[in-house]
Length: 262
Image (cartoon, one colour):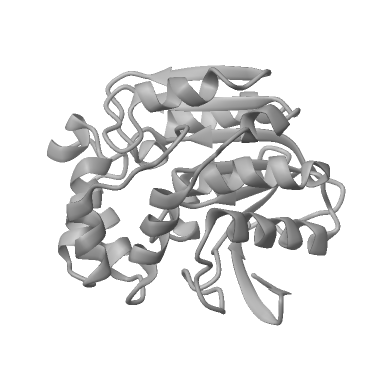
């Protein structure tokens, strides 16, 4: 489905159910270089369990128009505008990786549009390895390869896709390789330069944070630094799961989301 924001098309997935104004709005924000499809295992589930689900393509990602936004703050302002434009808020906001930083900033900058946060694969900061940042700047396939390798837990490297016959890492890499030139670098640079400051102190809504024990990109110690500054937080641990948790453990993430969003 499409709406318009700032004169450009905004594409989003609803899980096959039309967004209804009498249902609680849930907005899902993807990570660096990705798009709405990373939420496919959750969007449809939420849509059939009493929520109006919207998994967004950020500008310049997936099928949304416009150029990629260059900072986490700009992305947050854009997401707030989208929610305002739908006129169905406040929203329950779910963010993964870069999308978790965006979600934090939305809640801090525009508290009136957010009533609950769920953050997956998050941390107080998201520094990016120079080798990955350089490969992304050169638009080399090495960037998707590194993200795919570092982003999955041990089990996902050898087998374990919940959909029989599919290779989890290969699917993730194909998604990243589909990004237009410059998109992955833009997003990684935004994460690398992000400084949260006192953002945690500005957030008053309830927050659920999900951390994977094998997350190499936002490791548990980085998550603990963020959680320490939050006043109303429920921390969920997933043993044996990496950064791409909504793909690695879709059933467990669905259960966590359903409980957190009630």
